[in-house]
Image (tube, rainbow, N blue to C red; front, side):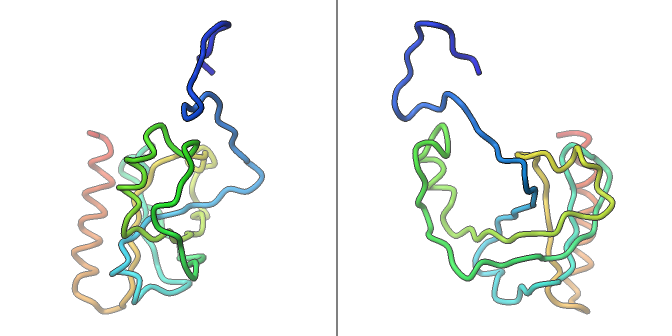
Length: 142
C-alpha cells in the first residue's frame, strides 16, 4: 500500500488489492478461433517468465462453456479501457498446475506462456515445440 495520511484517491483508482490464496490455478487466454479443437486433458507445454530455460508439461483442466467479453469493473485494472480493448477475442482456459513446478512459480499474478497441442501427429506441433523452447530460453533475456 502506497497511501499516506491525507492523500485522496478517485473512486476508480486502485488503492488496495485483495488476493484469495485458498485455491491456486492457472488461467490461460486463447484466441477463440483456436478453441474449436481444444478439449479437456490435452497436452500443454508451458514456461514461466520467472523460471527461464525450463519447460513444464501439464494438461487442459477446464474450458468454460461461455464468457462475457469486455465486461470488467474499474477495480479490475488501473486502465479499464485498455483491459476491455485487450479482452476482445480472448477465451480463458484453466490449466492444471504442473506436478514438478516449484510452489513459488504459482504465486498469484505470475506470468507464463502456454501452448496446447490439439492434434497428435500435426506437423505444426514440431514447430510449436521449437517456438516454446526458444521462448523458454528467451526468458533469460526479457
